[in-house]
Image 1: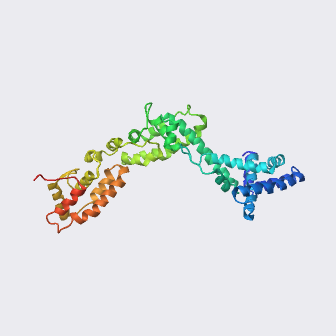
Image 2: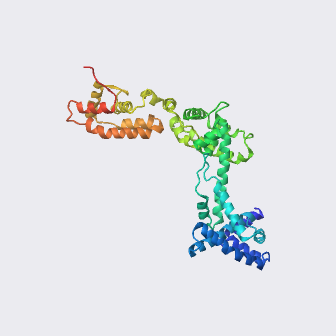
Length: 408
């Protein structure tokens, strides 16, 4: 540990404001003269009044008291950050600068902190007022708060620049990424995955391409997946991004790759568990059928591309009845199904199980909601023994399903 770092940690552990600690040190070692102390005593009230007026009222005693805390905190922040916790350097800074200069220096550090990104997003960050930020932060007395916020925002700034750089690898312009307000790390992670497993022509335009890439990665052995990550060449990546890249590579190896081990997991569920960690453009409606066909072959085979609620409710009714699944039923077949329900029970759980097993994962919640709403009403009509000629049940099914009326 360097001497400066050691001094900084000791300064942080001292419960008194660093300005006070440095002042005592400077007086004891004759770095600060009596005339300098007198100058500080003269400047401080002026600065307190200015600060009180900026954040409240210079005429109220509580505001003046808060202003005293603010000006000492600001001067302490500047001295601590500039000296690295070295009391000798801090005392000399006090000797060579006015007290107001020191407090303005602390204010400048907070303004610079405010200007840094609060989140690692590639959009144009909408900030509040710097005055509100200064009002809150000038009352913070723990140096660790500023240090943690500074390190966090510096990391955000680095991730944002890396996001734009790796965005170019994916063929995404800076302006596009800003408009999309994309997550920086998601862009970096996506570019690395494509670089390692996508080949020279790899891309990640939408979730269809993501599912295709995931399926290709799943075909590899665990050893091949790890080896591919280890062979990643980052020599062309700017040096300042190397620690970030290494961190994300480690995250992929420890979090993402193990998900590929379970061969029983469907491609759909695997994609669903991974896709929020990567950047995918919002897929258009015409991509939906292609995605469904790729990840849910059973779903595609039975729905035959139909996505309207009436077709799907018809399919679910067939599955619940244990008959050949169809998205449209002749009136005669619908009547037979109602009769079967009344004799053997309305086993709607069978359709629920099928939705959970075969439907695309991202559609399951909506489908289950539609099916449960259907069930709630269906019990009143399909299981009504008083409806002996099935007319009420068939009217209900005609409203919610595709029922082909018999030609009379």
